[in-house]
Amino acid sequence: MKQEIKIFFTALMFYTRIPCPKFDDFDEELLNKATRYFPLIGWIVASGAVLTVYLLHFILPLSVCVILSLAVSVLMTGSFHEDGFADSCDGFGGGWTKTRILDIMKDSRVGTYAVVGLILLFLLKISATVELLQHDFIFGLKTIFLAHVLSRFTTETLIFTHEYSREDATSKVKPLAKKLSVKNLFISLLFTLPAFLLFQNVWIFVVFIPVYLMKMYLARYFTKWIDGYTGDCLGATQQITEVIIYLAMLILWKFI
Image (cartoon, rainbow, N blue to C red; front, side):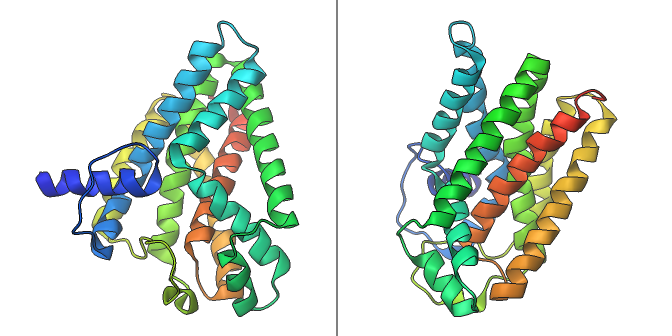
């Protein structure tokens, strides 16, 4: 149990800015195991976003509440995934070879592709979430949970099914989980399923189809250009599939 708590705090430490106990005996295998708690991190971040919307909607317009909830989620994660999305936009937008793409993605400077990508990403998140909440407030709140949890699980499936870009593996980048066992994927799935059960409707599982198709497309795209994925690719996958979930739910809300 003590080891499992340590693994959970490892996940909390690397995927959020939430204060947690520190320890010195870190190794890569610990981070690989911590990936099993990625959907649970989604529950925690989504809780902050949902609580913000719920408390503020009594006194502020819904659109303002959604923007503030987005700010809360960004603060909780330290823009961890948004940074990966931005770097991916710059890398794949401005690079035409594997080496050049990886070099751009490692550059801390932000380019035009990243700025435009982030603007479109946030606009889609805000507008889709506002629409969902206006249709059915409780349904919208449940969707926020589903989007955060399922997008993180989908990112884990990319780690499970594809290889880390070997050329990037020797670079001095922040620690990253690069492999996922069947056991950890199953545990992660157990943390994900309750997000579907919130809706108490079998139609909700349909949303997994466009999400997984997008994941497969991104995985194929990453492999084509850089022979695998990087940490930035995982961040991009999480952000893009989160948006796909919001858009899919806008289509499905009448049936759920």
